[in-house]
Amino acid sequence: MSQIAGEPATQDFVEVRLPAAGAYLSVLRTATAGLAARLDFTLDEIEDLRIAVDEACAILLQQAVSGSVLSCVFRLVDDSLEVTVSAPTTDGHAPSRDTFAWTVLSALAGKVSSAVDKDKTVSISLYKQRGAGPGPA
Image (cartoon, rainbow, N blue to C red; front, side, top):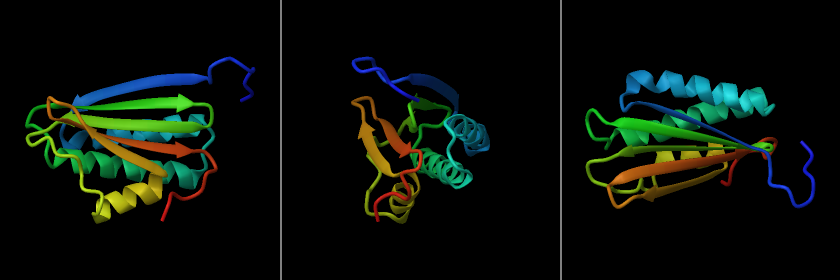
């Protein structure tokens, strides 16, 4: 997409809210694949994002409040996709960055960050740019 100087980048926003239970993660994997395909990501990039979203959700579900809602926000900006998954948690701790799961997220998604709100809602954000190659080692 070309951009006219001084105009904001083209951006689309999609939010999916579902029960915080593993049985519903296939919905997010499908949404991730569809939105990444819309941005002309390669099949490998799409699969990497699907796995990364699944892994981020698995991390959150370990501490999610029973019966709560998992929220997933997709932001499509030009040739990149940012996915933020969040859920209210029992302990309000950010995921540890020195785990195998975090290493997998970083390798698959490119940029990964986390945040904790004062109400103990934990968020994990993944950012992948089309054609950017693998994330940092």
